[in-house]
Image (cartoon, rainbow, N blue to C red; front, top):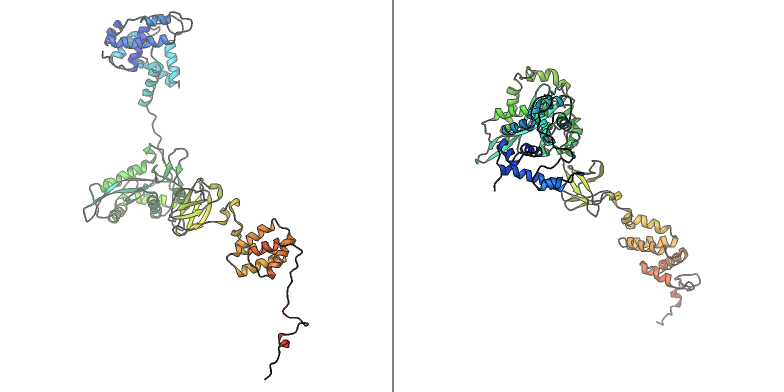
Length: 530
């Protein structure tokens, strides 16, 4: 059996009439529906009432099961179909006529609803007043939809945005003409345009992409062309400028934020989906596109030369339709002097991006590795690479490390970035180890110095081992062992350990090679007879 699917207001009228005691046949006849369609929605409502019987109403479930209209959940009797007091309108007749005309059930109560809106009432309050004072049988959703439609039909007029001289520059991209090379291959371009909001002075430039670096260079060229900087700059929410659009507090691309700081301007992105917030440049882009319509160019340079000539000879020489002033003269007379001065240098060119810190405390950037403080291990940081320097920032754009550029595959590790638990004593160098050994005693210091002279490379580890022995050996014994090692010219740590293992009463006899009581060997030479 095929039954029609009705709109919400039509279903509400069927249920309302059924609650008043009307049969499915009568409802279908009066509303012009098939009887099966009316019965379908009555049965659905009856099943819902049977599942949730009203407290104190013992007959509600039985009535729903028999297909008869159940008593309302409030326990009161169903309202009779009587005319509404005060206006002489039968709500049943009004509802049926509204359904037949395919209009909202609330249409008959338009004046009451509009009066409620004028008083600042909510849709919920209006529905309650209609049900209480006018026997309105429609649901809250019907009133809510009708109120929404009334509000959209009478929008509040927009407030015009006005700007003082030098206050704001609006910028945007638009689709440009084709570049047709000598080989016949076509390539689409983008047109960047910036417009001063007061004088409507503009600058246009063609590009092949809308990347962050391209956007910044176009913006920089615009300021240089105008000879100054505005207080604020209003771009669209393009990815090259805004990471996360938000009318109240947008998250800018860090590179754009650094650019704004360099030029002393404030980036104020427009509200997402509201193009009228940058109406000056929206119309300005369309103005440029109209001048380029139907044209092709052999190269990007040729297109930019055309745009420069067009800005000078056409755009600057027009009488603007809103200001009714000559654009070029208006700019020179009023707005140019109001611009902030340009910085002494151009914005530095660099690449940047978000990176994760490896477990060894380094980040990889352009095939080089750079250390960060140990507390940033396994966290994300922002790395900015200039021509000679690498600057590393936290995600709050706080500078945490600066390094010289490393060669491909090379490492740059700052001494302060080594965790104390991972700091080796050898990292301090041989001079530090020698000083530590000399503080242990005269003989120990002399032996360590002798080892450094005889074995300069291995001496660092040998002195580490000597310091380790000093932590578990009395100072006198270590001094005696070092003295023996010096006498025996033993420059290995094993000689110290061997001397420590010898009993302390063993006397070491040192034979002298010369003494006044010792005769020279020539005194014992026996002459042979000739």
